[in-house]
Image (cartoon, rainbow, N blue to C red):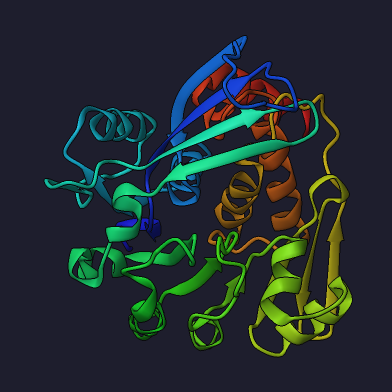
Length: 310
């Protein structure tokens, strides 16, 4: 049996979440937030944390700065059960990345200092470690600036080692949506964009056109639809699952949590309808607390929520 259920190579950074701010922030003014949280951030880091909280055996490779923020992130991941033995604490000018999230009632701003996010490279990876798993995943394709040119090769190596693979691009800050994505998708079993990302990645004018194009490139397309739930397309087969209704506190990390819920069941061989529901359930749980991992860190809260939704 492989050591891990899922291995992940990707970014790990701090999320600083500020709430209670006005919609407009004119220059030369000081504004007071009524809520603040420092928590695990980065799509890859949130996914690793929440997958482990759901019971998956997770191996995680990343690059962080040799600083207190990076060390605190490792402690958070280790506490929930993520193996971080291959995370590299790199000395140098680049520090652990940080994203400042300004939360409003129905939307948010995010400002990111990339730091070590963009420095993770091929040479940082231990491929024997990553291959000792049932499944391999990459998130934040467009933030992995040093790694991205070789992502197709990484996926090919994992496929040759017998793993299934998945990719979540997240957004492209440059809004160009190229950079070798089509080449990488040749080796991807499950592609997990949201609705906007699916359309951007294909140049399609609507979701149906995007899904049709993507279904010709990858065996399984899973599209996160937020409050509309999620859909999956496998060849000509379509699966849909409604969202779980909750009182939303904060949507930061909900998409990453969906991926965690989906993959947790996918690697166990569950049918697609069950995988979609598990994804929607994990995404909904994430929104019940501020930050992408806080609802999962609270074991009593997590287990009570999941039990109530059975």
